[in-house]
Image 1 (spheres, rainbow, N blue to C red):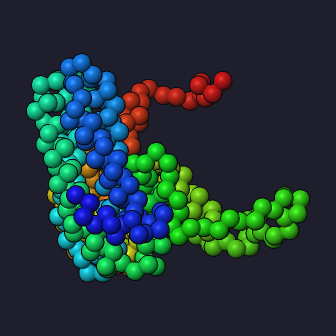
Image 2 (spheres, helix red, strand yellow):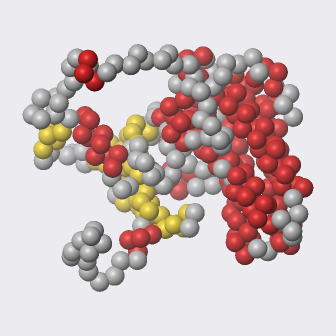
Image 3 (cartoon, helix red, strand yellow):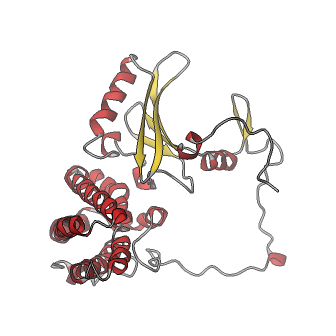
Length: 326
């Protein structure tokens, strides 16, 4: 392992690839601890280590939403298919072990845990031998500089947030009493745009979309993602690396055929809505697709909306007062 480590060590602090290797060291440590822990006598210790390991989901999400789109832009589409499928296989193993953990089925954990450990080690070997070396050759320095904001939005496995890359200069502190910078206010129609039923500034539009209790992704008529709303509690992770990406690369390989069929039906005008509901991490998620058409009924794209409806499903009767506000 770590055959590419000598090159990674030359990178500046905070470089995305260097951060991946810092995470890799943590993962290796956790895997070794899992192999040596006594499940019968130290189940709680095992459980804590396992829960720390499965934050590897953040690593998977950063690769799928950040690194892979840039590789696609440079003509390398393999990771978006093969490695994403590898991620999904590991996710399936994690879900299975989580079930056994909840039921404390020691024998089944002992039987299945080695498959997860071996799968993660195999994945990291492929990353080290092929993914990261090729990425360093394909991506420009300007590409790498664009990663930090999106990576931060998804998160890392590390206990401390990595330093920004490139390093940011310290901004000079200005006391509020000496702050004379002019700022735009939205108390009038100045700087607003007119929508069907009102006026809003770009800032207000962003706030509206951010606080909607649904995930929204807009794919245009050319099958490219042109927008997603950045809510604080998104059901599925997104980052700015997805903008401009073909929709076929934005879903796991095992389900992308469904998305492509929906798009084809919408384009043909035979369907306008598609919906699903799934159990995801113990929550009920409602997923809907809507065809977008202009006033002449011409296809202009599709909106994907996802919403956690777990609590909505529990509603009964009526609630007309703010009983729980006092």
